[in-house]
Amino acid sequence: MTFNGFEQKDFDTFSIDGLEGRMEAIQTRIQPKFQEIGSYLVDYLSAQLGNEVYLHIAKHARRTVNPPQDTWLAIADNKRGYKKHPHFQVGLFDDHVFIWLALIYELDHKKAIAESFIDSFDELKELPDNYVVSLDHMKKDSIALPDLELKDVERFRDVKKAEFLIGQQLPVNDKRVVSGNEFLKTAKETYTRLLPFYQKALSSK
Image (cartoon, rainbow, N blue to C red):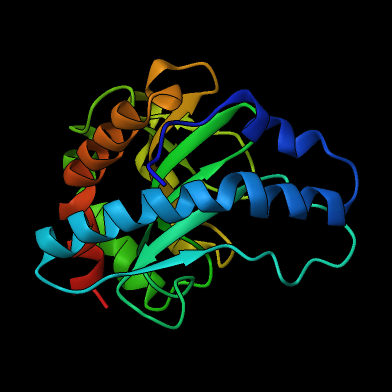
């Protein structure tokens, strides 16, 4: 299978009622695409980093009642898990795809990593203006990079549950979403720009 882009049916998955029905659609519609995207990006990132990285596809295993509002793949340098490590994500809500460098609340050495990002705030602000920052991976909300303030990164350091995800959100009908080649190219370019911050996070641990 070759990744040919996302289609409306993939996003419609999140309007299916009930955990079982939605999970079945995630597993049959979306996860095979994640496997294709993830394999491509794992090869690319491993080559760029000179280290092996590993693909993790969200299983939503802890859910017993409420169906997931989004789903994602993660790529990290740890084979067993990703949540405690700086990692890359690609995922879907019902109205957009996200491409993140993700530092979520389970992160080990969170304070030290946040300090390195505070020190690099000017470099963060030099990323493209169409990049956005999320402070909570469970929510769709994001801050346009030009509106990001130092206090947002300080909050990531100071608040236990605070998170910091940076990258792009592409709306459902964006041509980069519906074309497989364009999407892979966009994801690769996004991660290339974010690699210095990923490496900074790793070296802060």
